[in-house]
Amino acid sequence: MLSVLRVHLPSDIPIVGCELSPYVLIRHPDKTVSTEDVPESLPIEGHFLRYKWYRIQSDKKVAICSVHPSEQATLQCLGCVKAKIPVAKSYHCTPKCFSDAWQHHRVLHERAASAVNENGNEEEDIYGRFNNGTSGVNNTSLSSVQAISGLANGTTPLYPAAFTQRNGGETWFEVGRSKTYTPTADDIGHVLKFECVVVDSETKSPVGHPNTILTSRVIPAPSPSPRRLISVTNVDVAGNLDLEGRLSSAGTFTVLSYNILCDSYATSDLYGYCPSWALSWPYRRQNLLREIVGYLADIVCLQEVQSNHFEEFFAPELDKHGYQALFKRRTSEVFTGSIQTIDGSATFFRRDRFSHVKKYEVEFNKAAQSLTDALVPNAQKKTALNRLVKDNVALIVVLEAKFNNQGVDNLGKRQLVCVANTHVNVQHDLKDVKLWQVHTLLKGLEKIAASADIPMLVCGDFNSVPGSAPHALLAIGKVDPMHPELAVDPLGILRPASKLTHTLPLVSAYSSFARIGVGHGYEQQKRRVDPNTNEPLFTNCTRDFIGTLDYIFYSADSLSVESLLELVDEDSLRKDTALPSPEWSSDHIALLAEFRCKPRTRR
Image (cartoon, rainbow, N blue to C red):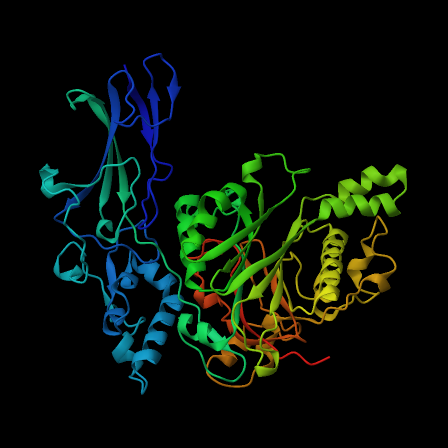
């Protein structure tokens, strides 16, 4: 007879909006074992599996710590309540938790004060004094209803009357009847129970005892502080990013570049400081999707997108938001894992803003083969290929705009845009390979530019810091022959240095922050830019490395930067960790720039 051997959850910490998918191991009547579902419509020898989810509702209301969401809160910041900050951000599990988080927490107060109290109130009145005993902090046990009057957890079951009363003031509300369940805001602070039982097809009665799992308390999905769009044309558009109406009427377009951290790399060995539940793909994919969709970008360039995640998640989910998807998987000559877990670069564009004209794929492995065939002696070819073949790729897409901002003289002319999306080799000791890959990409883009009057955008994770040889080649079109990185050239592929040039008038979009004047938000952004390189202080932030690796370059003769997504500073990251974190699901930060096509000159 059909029987259930085991049930378990990949993570026992449920998060609002993140689907819970239990692992159910069953034994078939023929003694074989599988994890296949056995629905009522396809019973096996008169039996099927029935699933139920319950929310265990206690008379004791629970608040969740805003910093450590797996912990129950024991104190509340009254300053948050007075400043009308969302109540969920006011709770902390211990006084030490509140103390450690104060520098970041204080930013919430300051933003609320600047938004609501334009004339300013005294800080002591609004925030309380953190260092003055418990002023400004409600340290009363949150077991009393009065202490958590701001909480409102739902009590209406999806299936009325489908609950049983338990001892100790707990009630089980049935909330789902499928194998998977996605927690809602009503579940916050409550334990969930999953139940799986074999059922007789004729009598509809359970056979044997149900298998059950209890989760920990459901936590809200952590959310980072929203990033604003900052104008770099001295027109103040600072504020929360809500640009849908503005973009559709202004004739500008936005481009997002984001390394989302491939799931196969998001391990506890590499990111042990991040809670395991926040590293799990079911959580990260929903958090990443919310972030990406929230930017409302017209063109989205993602790196480290796992092949199966592109096909099964990102392409269909972003399609719902009006995006068409293109993907280039990395080649697999070096990669030894499953073909489905190979990552690649994915480019999405809004169908109402652009149409697809052409797609080019750059495989650096093929370029390496051509290079060694032409320049490397036969005896050294194997060594050369071992150094150059790293499976990196680039995806180049030519799009046609469905809007026009060229003026009367250019009505009817097609407005094309070429978008390159790449992820350059990561190995620190292969500086020659990084530079060669960037040079190869730029030479390909030069050919496209020579065949059409077309603006260029070059986006991606270049694994190269500002001032490196690849960055110099991108930003100024050449590499100084005395650059120290040119000394690493065992194959002689970088000589002579005079060949390391290109003619594309590329400029880094984020260098625009260094050129803006004074005003709201400007000085703050300038402090987040390196004055020597005019690039962000960091786009990648882990315990082992903090620096800039990601860029959006544009052709300055045909495009101008209108605004930029504000840079993240240390106050916006949680004090006690690096990236990824529960709030930010990648070890990189997203970059976004708004562009306008310059009027074409007559020829």
